[in-house]
Image (tube, rainbow, N blue to C red):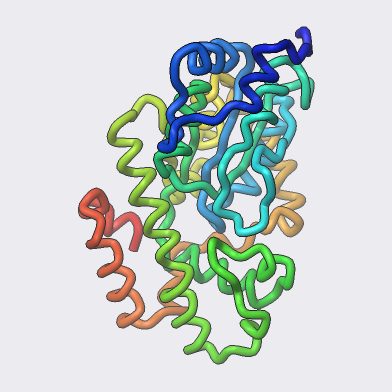
Amino acid sequence: MENRLDSNAVNAAFSQPDYDGTFQGAFADYLGALGKRRPVLLFAFAPKAAGTFLRSAAIDAAGGQLVRVVHAQGGRDAQPYLPIFIAYYLGGVCEGPLVAHMHMQALPANRRFIEALGIKPVIMLRPIPDMLASYWDMLAASGEARAEGLNCPIPARFPDFSPAEKADFMIDMIAPWYVGYFATWLDYAGERPDDICVLRYGDFKNDPATALRTALAHAGLTQPLEICQSALDTAWKDRGMLRFNKGAAGRGKDYFSPAHIARLSRMMRYHPVLDGWHDALL
């Protein structure tokens, strides 16, 4: 595929969308045409939802390459970076399909971006207390994870907090991001059900090959189940390096009190779109 930054590409890379992220006119037409050139598999997962593990298997199964598609990872609440996508669609960046993993909420600007390029993200539903428990473990063990944070600074002394202090911090400071994540994505999935692939963690645990095949097919990268299973087997051998923790269901109850869960439930009630999802997310 030709890799040439013509005047249209250069103008697009240096142009700005409207304040809400909407691309207009010839700018939008150009990006829409670009988006049809090559497939993109975007895992827009929350932290600790098996995203690193699943993306690694997807890369193997589809012959793809992991690409950092954000300006920087610091803070982790990512927004896509347009020049990377332009270069990819013009034939650069990587030879095979682009695979990206972003801790991204479906905020308006992000929605307009993926719509402009025709990208169809994949998200994962997992109970929030279980993800918070897993993230707690990672923050306690990894200075790198504490430095990255999640849309808020993580105290350097987090490992020295008492269990009660850690639980309070996770609910008070980290849980709101998770609630916002699911509120935005489930609202967006309701608007565009054919464009957002919603996986469930329980289904992934019970039949990971089918979950992987579903994600690949959603991006137009369908592979046989046996290829998916082989890729998962390979990724499983490296699960320690892929930040795959315990993956156990219900572990949040060992970390958080009923009062903590009640506070999390109250946060969710601010978002009517989550009213039907309490069982899946709590």
